[in-house]
Length: 544
Image (spheres, rainbow, N blue to C red):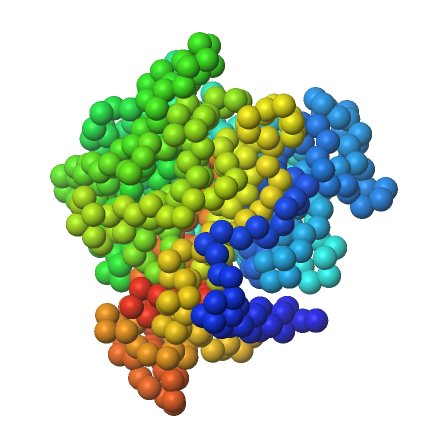
């Protein structure tokens, strides 16, 4: 079966699914997709075409998924199992709801990643023999592709670092434990080395609280970097701090291990403004209190929102319905909402250091007035604590996996066992009451649709009715999710013309691709038609 035919069949499945839902066929907000994929999803990345790569670390010991016969991993440098016949990575097919084992050769523990312009996952760093490794994975049609690794391609060890794709298609890799610097990959020349970034040293406290810094590509091409409780705007080409932002009010830490989360809010067509939202985390001393004294302090319930392009930027503080640490923040494709999912209400990130699972997601409505932006959603039943993750799927669901707060896999005699399942959360726009308003984009031929910067393209779609608030289009970059931060996550609201009726229940709207690679670095995105806040299933596009 060709990939294009599979995607078409998947579209038909979704239409049938929503028809069943409207007719009372047992629709649920939460659905278990796989009771076990054998590997805990510490890291996740959605790739074209609808494949999710997930992995944990090689030094957890044996996983619950065997490698194909005879493909055992032999590593004399491995710290736990030197000959390991189990997988520590999985490729999950969203279309088929199936999975297969993959082989990682070096330790991926607490690593980072970026998708290259050609759709290859470029995955960097980790621990032990993987601390300087770069790994590559690109889905294939025959199911025979696997990880390819270069063990010493990074200049220095990168453990708990953050990656961001740049307008030229390279990745910048920032920070990591005891690394107060950044480097680029691919290297521009073989002698390329690291660039010092003293800001990362300045934001390190006795608990660290500066690992996995939040990084967003600003609309001026510079990098917004947040670590601990403050932020800078960095011209990475000249290694110049363009701006220092005010410290977030309250001064509490937001980065690992006091793990909050952050998103760059949707960018409008003019792209003259950019806002960052940071939510949750743990108060100062929470890590020490939990690790050394067995006490679990309440997590932070505050969020800070800042327009990073203002001449005199300031933080607007808000309060979530409940405290949350280790929560994931996902931009939803309608361009109007952020879902905050996973995490705990007490403690901090680290082995056995979180308690009171945050089972109920919270939706943050971006355009609402302050004080009326949060809404609690239906609760899950599975705790997702330390080492859990979440990514947006092309059909608008949020895929959730992982949770392993233990040094090894542990399924009994503990309060929060290692979790190997995958489940999906369906936001409100997927409820049966919205099914008739959900647009369905016509397959435009061979996917992905090729887009050029600043050029128009047609989006033809079916809808029972055009809502009064009108039709927009959004473009979403799939993110690399780990440790409560979705690296490279980006949503653009596209310029669109008037909707034209082209048949009974059929419409066309002309959209304009982003103007430059600064707004949308080259690569694969998902494009959605949004009918009065109800997004279609997305289509894959490639921007260059």
